[in-house]
Length: 344
Image (tube, rainbow, N blue to C red; front, side):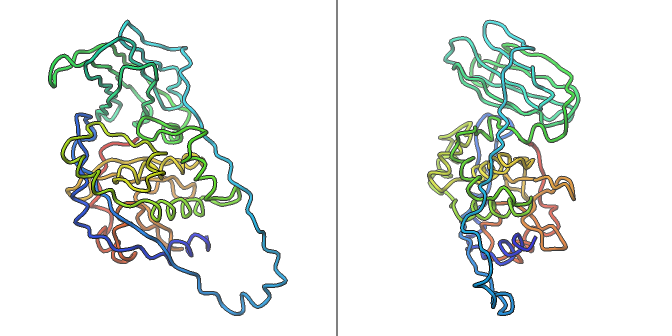
């Protein structure tokens, strides 16, 4: 716990105008992604102040030069083919709904746009873009247990789409975490991803939940800066249906708020920490943030750090825009500005 507090309570975040939050627009005809997200720039720093009493016997201390590396735990989705809805145009593999996902593949030749819609017990519609190739796309069953309808559509003309194939299934998952531990279209990674390897570098196998959160969070805040040029292209509609390619985001060291949240989600999931990528609104601005699960407290929404008494909000974009934790808290208040609409 002390390590977590040192990292996050003493971290200072460079100021970037919150006006930038209204500039990061997401786009396109993907249903759940119309509108804009917020993002910003960050640099974290700071140093610990040690008491003389705590360091006087330093020469006698046994200080390890290296830590035991963390071991990634990437649970990959599989199209096992046991339960399939298929015709000449598309294939829906629903063999592994117990693990919180379905997989879809387009089979036919087409020059038209393609969409997948998933509607679960909450009746929230999740609309995704897919492409005519030989790869499966993975879609989470974010609503938990209950009845789901999965439909695949092919564009007819303009905004008109025809149903290519679909089905309704009843889902009973192994646990509530299943959809939020695996890769999917919006949080896409595998065992060999640079994103996964970087997460393993940042933490030790002996680190606890809070230490892992702190290490990954601090890295994302330091490493990513807000990509103004790309945000402007998004606003102008040049990147409809944008989905982060996480290793590319990591290499560039910049992105929009969708990139911030997706990168951190992937890193934490690869370390067996259930994490939701949340899409919704912060005030009137379309935004992306994360929610993590703690065995002590359950799902913790918008948490930034634990100060020993209280959870404070973890939103990797707003944190990067605030000059201090107190400034962030003044803006966020009690969290009522957040309104989630979709979970991935």
